[in-house]
Image (cartoon, rainbow, N blue to C red; front, top):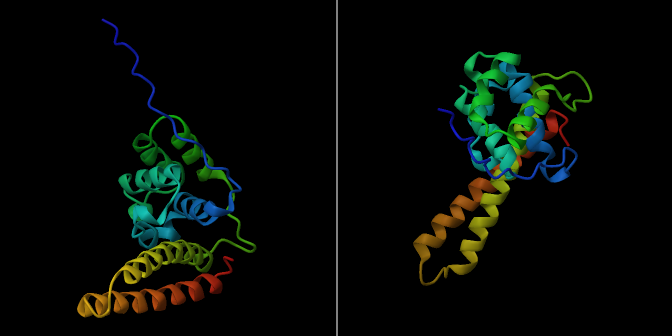
Length: 176
């Protein structure tokens, strides 16, 4: 008895490799796949929301499900562990691409460079969180809800300081 072939899942649009909106996301994924010993737990701590393109979200999730960059797996072993967690099609092809596409470091790929990429990616996420809080603050009355307003404002100040430190860390490693 032969099984009917499964209906192909709806494939997602492939991100353009040179799209500047996703350059940091792409570089972070390449770092995790190619230099997991360096990217390690710092990469593994990135939430899915750090990635904004659906293909990159799926690749990040596959790497984490494979044990993450801190799993001790390297090179082809990490790729082989992540691949089964990727849907067939675009996501799996992009995973394979990212495993071999050279990182864009001007000098050698070292911990400073990879930390700067991960900091820049985290900075983007924090920037989106700041924008969300600013939107909430605009809709909240400091007179009618002073406690909520103060709490949100405190969160905003803390996030802006964190974003600034991430920017400094990114600049120190030469990721522009």
